[in-house]
Image (cartoon, rainbow, N blue to C red; front, side, top):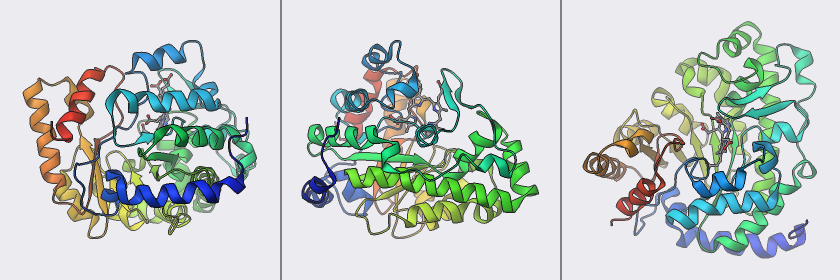
Length: 358
Ligand SMILES: Cc1c2[nH]c(c1CCC(=O)O)Cc1[nH]c(c(CCC(=O)O)c1C)Cc1[nH]c(c(CCC(=O)O)c1C)Cc1[nH]c(c(C)c1CCC(=O)O)C2
């Protein structure tokens, strides 16, 4: 299914992007401009917390659902319809570009990405070739379908950052310590930088497809960068993430840069070239804004477990995030990490109302 051809793009993407940049609270906040309401969306807003998601995914493997434009579109729209969030996040996964170029990786339910042949030496780089638009036709098609449905709701595209992708490739799966990853990083810096350079190129290719198809903002997920101290982050990781972010400088698409446990890296993650720095729940947004410095907005940062608190405690925590966020040059409300599968969607709807002033 080809929805829109490159020649349509100039005609359709740019007017939408230019208009929404002025109208959409999320895009205004990303540039530090005043908004009528604080924009809110949730990482993993599409997913197992929603019964309609579980129904649609029944019997469909995760990676199959990420390669079907109609399913991607429907799953992306579900939380927007239900919650009235100020953005949709494109339904996919950080390993999709790796799968698309032929790397043997699967997503195992309850575990996460599992890599058939972990990368441990120079030969392991061979499969990591650049990604072209023809590798991911369903991404372009789904974005065109989504833009036709979303009206004034911005669509956020995303990709995994080189370090977080490298962690899955080197470890072979999820890891608490990232020990093998760091072992490679410390013992063979040349191979390490070659690996991250290839991953940066793949990530740029994956984001380029999304930007060209018309996404309104992008988020670079460096979920596990918080495993590093600041010196190692700056030396081994930041240049590669900076290369990715620099590729979209001047694209008109704001760049959000997020990781977990990155309180000590917020300055460096901003300097890597982000317009918005995503913050987990461990650092208040007023302090996060200080660390991020002028000229950048912040995103976050309600503890994802706050949804399990009594209503008065939850409301107090939401108010506190809003108050601290008001000290920043632009605030996009979010959780500090993804929606937990046990979350009651009704509580998330209530959080949206609280953030919007209800
Ligand atoms: C680290 C990471 C991954 N994937 C992603 C990250 C970065 C974000 C983060 O830090 O959480 C990114 C991601 N993965 C998914 C999204 C969807 C968009 C959204 O609504 O936010 C996004 C943005 C869908 C998904 N990706 C995955 C699911 C769950 C699979 C399912 O529903 O069957 C979803 C909805 C699978 C996945 N994929 C990954 C993990 C750790 C898991 C969970 C494994 C499990 O607990 O079952 C790798």
